[in-house]
Length: 97
Image (cartoon, rainbow, N blue to C red):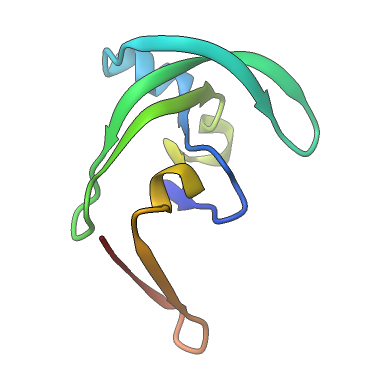
């Protein structure tokens, strides 16, 4: 499960899932949320979802997303090269690169 979050400036990945997938830590940095700030590992990742274009997330911040039943949170750093259209009345969306 992944969440598209247009309010997030950075893409995040569940740290445990990233480690299990063998992703490379490329850096560490501050992850700032509404309630906290912490230094976390930053992974090089590629996000591929069935039926959607894939994205390179060269700086995906590792954090605990499992408690929200998520593997990734897709932020504006990855979405900036895409067009996202949300159709509120029928609850659908489309993404194009």
